[in-house]
Image (cartoon, rainbow, N blue to C red; front, top):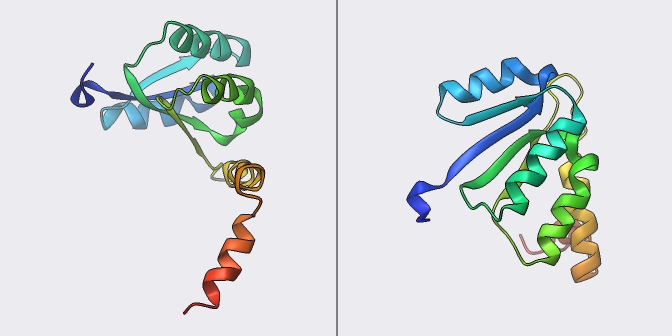
Amino acid sequence: MSAEAYKILFAATKDYEDLGKIFAIVGVEAKIMEDDAELLAVLREILEAKQTEYAIILMPEKFIDITKPIREKLREDGRYIPAFLFLPDIGEPKFLQLEELNELLKRIQGVTIEQIREQFKGTK
C-alpha cells in the first residue's frame, strides 16, 4: 500500500463518541466500541492481520495502559506502522504518553527528557 493510501484511525469507547464524530468531520476514520474489551479486540484484529491501512491510531490517553502490551509487541516485531498517538484528557490531562516516552528513552539511551532539557539549557 502506498503512503498516499494511509489513513488515520481514531479508536475509543462510547465515552468518546463525540470526539470521534469531530475527527470524522475532518476525514479521520473513527471506530467507537462498547467497552475496553471490544476496543482491544478490534485493535488486535487490525494489527494481527498485519494491516498497514492505518499509519496513525489516535486514542484518548486513558487507553495507554491497556494498549501497552499490544504496542510493545509491535515494537518487538519491528513494526512502526501504525504509530499510536494519545490525546491528553481535556478536563484533567495526565500526559501519560510523555511519561512512557521518558521511560523508553531512559531504557534505550540511559537519559531522561529532563536530563536532555537541562543539557540543552546550557548550550543557549
